[in-house]
Length: 331
Image (cartoon, rainbow, N blue to C red; front, side, top):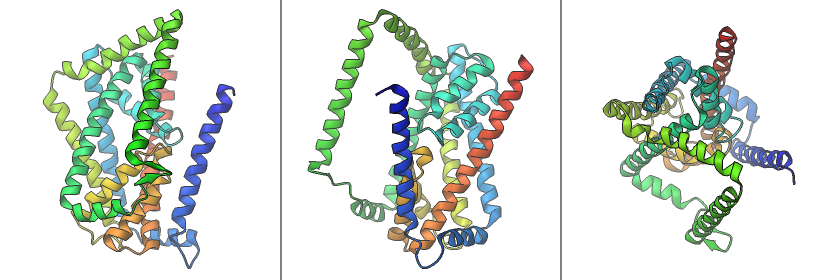
C-alpha cells in the first residue's frame, strides 16, 4: 500500500471514529430536534462570560508564545513575540484537522518567519509538552484530592477494566513491547542507510540543542511562573464557561476541577482537537457527578467545545493571513 493511500485511510478512520462518537453523544438529546435544542442552549448562554473566556484564552496563548520564545533564546535563536504567537496559533489551527500535527507545523511557520531551525524549535516544543504534562498531572491530582469520591466513582463506570480477553496491564505491556520492537527496527534501518543516518544525526543535534535549552534559561523562575499562569488561565476558562450557562452556573470550584480533569483526559485522545472523545466523556461526567439532565449536559459540552474551537479557528486563520502578509513584505 502506497504512503499517500495509507495516510488517507488513517485520517478517514480517525474522522469516522470522531463522527461516530459525536453521533453517540447526540443520542443524549431526546424528545425534540437536536439542532433546535443546541440553538436554544446557545441563545440562553450568557455571552458576556463567553467573551471573557475568549479574552482569557488569547492571554493564555500570548503567555505560551512568550514562554516558547524564552526556550528558544538559549539555543541562539532569538525571535519576536509576534512571530512565536502567530506560529503557535497556526499550530492550534492545524491540530484541529491533523491530530498532533500542530507541533511540527508551528515550528515550520516560525522557520518561514525568521529561519529558526525546525529541529531546534521542535526540541523546545517537546520540552513544553513535558512541562505541560507535569502541570496537568498536578491539576488532576488536585481534582482527585478535592473530588476523589466522585471522580473514582465516575472512573468505575467507564469500560476500561478489560479489552477483549486482555487485562489492562497485559494490554499496556503488549503495546510497550510493540513500541520497543518498532524503535529497534527503525534504529537498525537508519544505521544501514548512510544518507539517512547522516540526516538523523544532523536532525538530532538540532533537536538536542532545543531540548536542552531549558537547562540554560536565564530566568528559570519566570519560566515556572509562566507555566503555572498558563494552566491557571485554562482553569479560569473552564470556570467562566460554566458560569455562562443556567444549567451549570451553580456548580462550584470542585465541579470545575472535576470537569477539567475529565476534559483533559478526553483531549489526550488522538482525535482532531479532542472532538468526539470530549463530547462523550464530559456529558457523562456532568450527568453522573452533578445530576445535570443528559440533554443539558450534551448541549453544554457541544457549545463549550464549539466556542473554544471557534476561538482557535478565528485566531489561527488570522495568524495565517498575518504570516502571509509578513512574508510578502519581506520578499
